[in-house]
Amino acid sequence: MKRVIGLSLATVVATTAAQAGEIYGRLTERSRPIAEGTTVKATCPGFSAEVRTDRFGFYRLFIAPVGACDVVVTAGNQSSARFGIRSQRGSVRYDFELDRRTSPPRLVRR
Image 1 (cartoon, rainbow, N blue to C red):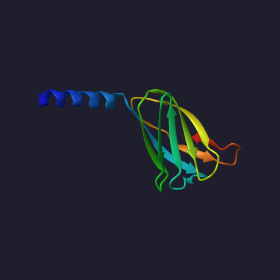
Image 2: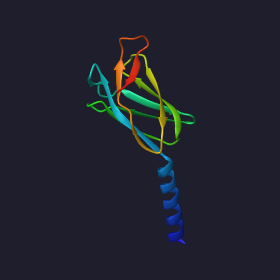
Image 3: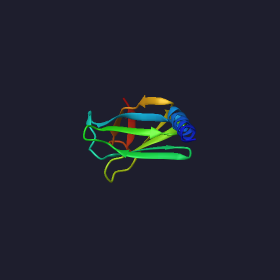
Image 4: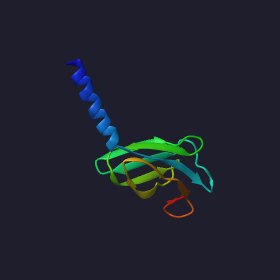
């Protein structure tokens, strides 16, 4: 009985992991790593995830659904910059340059 439950649980976890996606990349501003702790949030229909960048500007988000999502970057108390993406099964790299010289700030994919 324990073996059947363990096998069933492993199957559910493997199935969920196979349907999940990962979005990762690097954020820069004026070709330099963005400040450590900058917030990166992915919002998809019925799901959102948020992380902070490391000192090199890298981030990594695990996204459950597959489809259209928005990535929103908030640096300090500044306005947010938004970029529409498409999450997929597996890993997708999105490197962005934050341009605060425009109003509102914008993200440019690199």
